[in-house]
Length: 289
Image (tube, rainbow, N blue to C red; front, side, top):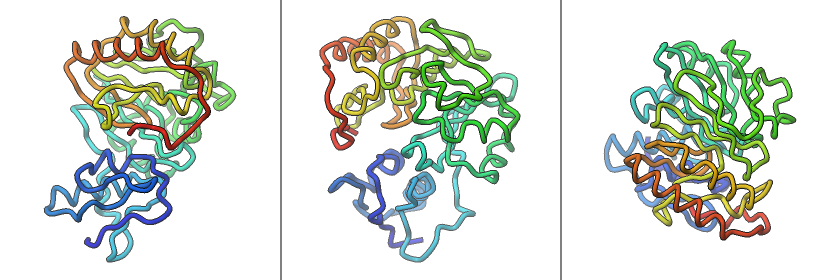
């Protein structure tokens, strides 16, 4: 496949640039090809970006994408996979599969709904739980949970977006949701936003915070906070010293792996910076990807 380009339907969700950062760049409020892939490894990066793109805006001039080249689910680490096939109904959010010691999997947020995709994920092993980080990513939770025969989880603060959830997280105290997995409620981005911590290694943050390539640090979506930036600051202050992880795995924004000690220091610094933030009008263009 050759002659890759990005069409005008791009929504600047950043997913493509996360997957092919040397090949796709931000420009004029969207993405564009910086250059064509030079070898097979770079071709795989562009394919990963193309099959993740919520608007299917990354295209080869030679014609439609070859479904046989779909790389998803894509391994990020041993037992950690990226689902790809991001959904317009979740604003293009990333979703993940996490293998548990029992051999089963948990899905954290969801890709676009497709029975064929669900079968592909289930082929890895039984999916026991679908963990929603907040209301913005709830669109396909019930469909995937029913297909897998899994439990659907959401916090009570966002329960109106998944009123038929099987498990409702309440309050602000950490709760164990599975072997080695704990949920930490983190109201701020939305009233019902949460973090899922697994194995002192993985932190699935939803839209509460992310890794910014622009600043080279952890950041909050201060320009897209639906509930309260002050509550988010208080949540980070309460939570920062209670969690340990190496990977930050957001819905929107980039992923990053660092030594746990460095990640803890950066999260503590983010909590301090967040205390200085004040409410501002929602502005999707102000995110520092």
